[in-house]
Length: 183
Image (cartoon, rainbow, N blue to C red; front, side):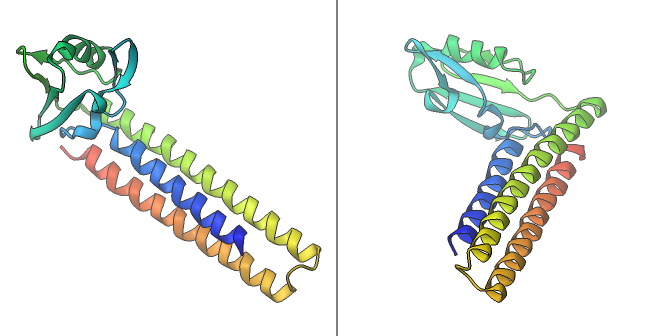
């Protein structure tokens, strides 16, 4: 049953990818993962912020970025400013403080639309995994490599997996949507 295992792994990966994408969407609360998409010009190359500094959240409306190398404080500040997060960092020479402004209603609705777009991409990935698995199982049945009963059992299992992972996606969306819309 390699096609079932492959399908389940692909569906699990789709949900995990969606979870990572959701972590980068602002909720009005400061979370270190908010800066995961920030790239910094360091040592002649573009690097993710989390490879050149630690990010912490001492309170719900502030992120503190502590560079590993003090000479990178300028490029890190520039990277945060250039990101499309709409944040205004300030540095005191040793750390960068990033205040997280509260979200207005319009911005919250934009984020909810973004969440729905990410969710649809996750659903598409799950559908692709389902189609690949079903095609594989049906080919095995056609070639008489597995019996009809076993083939139908596997097809039912693929459908069950699809329902379960779609439900997981819906649960993630509902939870994140509540976070974004809560004031």
